Image 1 (cartoon, one colour):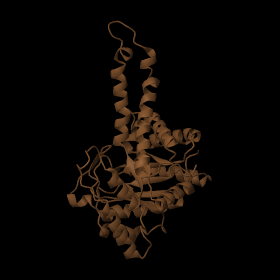
Image 2: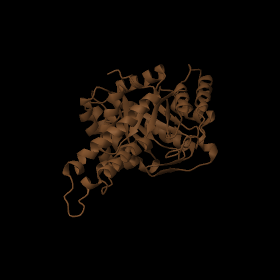
Image 3: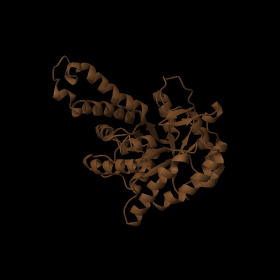
Image 4: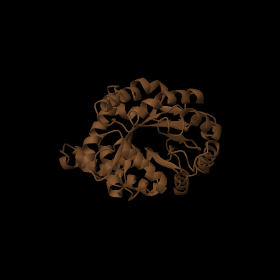
Length: 342
């Protein structure tokens, strides 16, 4: 199927909200990891989201060249072409763009999509994240308010972060007090008063409930997914809406229990970011392959090795399939397994 149109993406999120499930949003950094996600989603019968960070986009462009907008466009073109061969629908998203990266990442990508829309085509990306968690809340919301009309004009969706996800992802370090790891109703109220609830452009919100990026064991971080339900109720009461007025995003989910994920989804999460676990699945399988085929992948003692074993396609297929297994697992945790409309 082709990459989702803006209307299809909006429908995906609406169906997730109504159906009580969420989509895995997988960070990718190469054609192989893209193929892994498409394979896994297909095996799961699930639609999903592929996303790229600033660091991932840099890598797509070539690790010796810092040209992240170019890399992001290359990512989008590759997915747009190869996704036609898979029977599921995917959306494209840019992840975690802090303030200093806006001029070299999201803004040029927005300009490229504006040109596409002007020519009668769809935007290149269906959504973009503005990560204002490292700046004061008022400035965070001010920048979101500047971006939202441009997103609306190209029928794309803005992702914002209200609160601070701890830890580090792709060079974006988030520091803050323990209190900052838990978004408050007052924080979200301030954002809604400025951004609206869809009438000024659609946005999805990464609220924080103790989340930390990176690696941790279950129980190593104190998550409070029930907080999301409390915020939904507070915003509904404040603005006179129906239940769960916010479309929510779950960041920093590595090590989360099935129960924590289920409660977050029940409280309005429609998108969950996944990076650490899929990275590990991909690389762990390569390590296992190399150890198992040691004499074939190395030219030992004057021998020639085994070309069929050191051919990058040999271990690449193993890695792609291993990562695809983790993608399938994510769809089961989030409830999107078997939910593809394609």
